[in-house]
Amino acid sequence: MSNLAVLPIILPLASAIILIFFNSNVKVSRFLTKIFTLIGVIVAGYITSETLFNGSIILETGSWVAPFGIILVVDTLSAVLVLTTNIIAVACAFYAPYSNLGEKENYYFYPFFFFLITGVSGAFVTGDLFNLFVFFEVLLMASYALIVLGGDKVQFRESLKYLLINLFSSMLFVTAVAFLYGVVGTVNMAQIAERISEVDQQGILTTIAFLLFFVFGTKAALFPLYYWLPNSYIVPNPIISALFGALLTKVGVYSIIRVFTLMFVHRLELTHEFFIWIAGLSMIFGVIGALSTNNIKLIVAYNIIPAIGYMIMGIGIFNQEALNGSIYYLIQDMIVKAALFLLVGIIAYVAGTSDLRKMGGLIHHYPLLGWLLFISAFVLAGIPPFSGFIGKLLLLDGAFQTDRIIISIIALGTSLLILYSIIKIFIRGFWGEKDTMKNLDIKSTKGMIGPVVFLLLFTVILGVGAEYFYPISNSIAEYLLDPQVYIDSVLKE
Image (tube, rainbow, N blue to C red):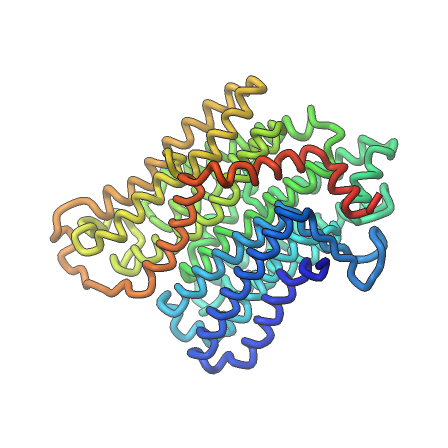
């Protein structure tokens, strides 16, 4: 049973290698990609059910007993995130043939697609801090290839910025891991957590903690480290933007959750208090960016930043309700961001532009597309009964329990502005007279709408079916607040 822990890594890795040999045959690559992603989501679903009913799955690779070997840990948090990743992968696989990738499909798009999934899944299941760095590099290398796919001049310009920022943060990451190893003598997360409380060098440990937060904050695009993200995420094809927006920043958030609930909990009054301020500033500056542009792709890209702020807010407050809200919001935001990037990609395609000032009246030609965007706006802003509301309600409940009034006001105000930023696309792009865009060439959206509906269906289910999903996220929050459970399961004490 422990071997199940390696499947989220092995399956997409094997899929990528197989698809390399079929790169020249696009039809076969498309078919195999759909099959492999469906297998992936079934396996991830089974692994999730195992963790829910039977507890964490621990794999000691090579039969090296923890903490001496490479350890894979699939607890409920990891399993749910791997499942969400695979759900998004399925939607993207079925969207890809209709996404106007064109000849880019022949540039090893599908192998790099699965290499990206490999890196993301590996980051979620590793129990080793150094291997977290390794899987970061795997997903980043795949993202470097995907962001320049096609070779447009603007892609190279933005990819250079993306590459340099991530190389710098990776250098800091491995440096921080080296410093931490020098202090505690291990890179196994469970053993680090155990030894940190025993080491009489709390000042050094706090410095390392902030260094790691800087690394993960850069990956997650928190304030003030987000400036690399918006343009970098809109220059590739919409399907690549959807993968980036849904997955890459969330690996940074997951890393903050894991590291600052398991290991660095010795100076909550300093580290986690700092998180709350960063969360509030991320909300404010992210939504300002979304409101400042008329580019529909940029609006969605900027809205990644306040969403990350909400997740970090729960970690900073650090009680069960707030952590529950962070987990719930993280899962639903991964799905809705993928749906939104795919949606605005379709809108830009049918309108022939990403500029809102050149749009209008699309509702008459593409009514379903317009109403899907309208629903997405409500999900993103946290309007009941959609899933975004559940996550934000839990976050606010946790904030009020600890009298965090200022961050609560910021969170509520930001939600309204997020709603306006997306509704602005609906009002200015879809509303208006039928002949507003006189030279509009009616284009088919065949094959594109289905994956978006598939993703939005999950966000609706997470909202209206909250009574079934709330106990899961609540148990994850309770588990995160008791790091000894993780330590005992890995070290078998």
